[in-house]
Image (cartoon, rainbow, N blue to C red; front, side, top):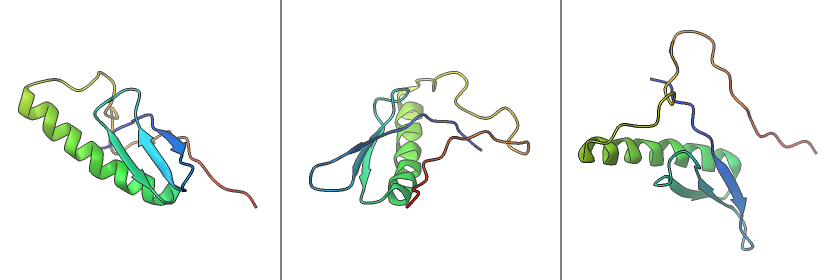
Length: 81
């Protein structure tokens, strides 16, 4: 299943980023690189889904893509040197 989750990557003074989601306040993780942040965000999202299921709470509407086999629109962060 594909989920669309807005993420905020906040640079940290010591390096790396803290990752949060305005849609899912329980989603908090970090990473040294953007790629690591995205991988960790997938793990954090899985944990949040489990928490919501355990508590009988529904996830926010529209979080899952309507057609997991169709096109998916994303925004990406890329670095240009």
